[in-house]
Image 1: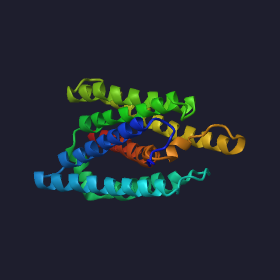
Image 2: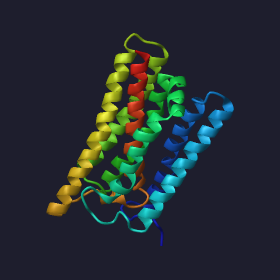
Image 3: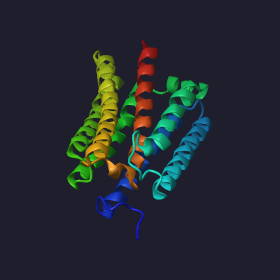
Image 4: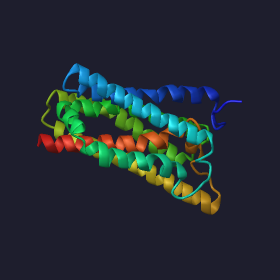
Length: 237
């Protein structure tokens, strides 16, 4: 008996669990780089890792104990995880002096290239391949994440090399990435509504372990990162 859902083979679930760690360490790395001193940077790194590991442990406990099983609007996984995390990031972290200090020290290219972690979004395509998700959201979310991730390499390079078009390119890329995550969330909401009303396939796989980490972690964190990039762009102007 394993805790993994039966939507996909176990090895895919294990691979996803490994992959989801990369964004956590990469975001913590931003905090360390933005510290005013190496000692402060290491403390920030440890705090971010500790925060996300505690948060993901809570998500795991809730998921494995059936807190997200009931199909409802808004989905319980969003009410109990994503929404509180988003509020915390935007209303608390966003206004802390330490966050502002980190943001001022980081290069714009650092904030852009960290989005390479959105290659993890390719698991949407895998879930779609195994018919665990409707093809509409699998393609929208999967391709959107992969495009955002791969293009972040070229945008970050343009910024680093101070290309004349770098700022406009960053504005366009950042807006695309933000719209993609918002569109994915809206599509998941619509599919859940249709599932309740008509019995069609919903996004149940995203409320099962370990894929519950996707809605619990990704939307709030990615939205926060995109808004941070807008803030950096406006500050540089």
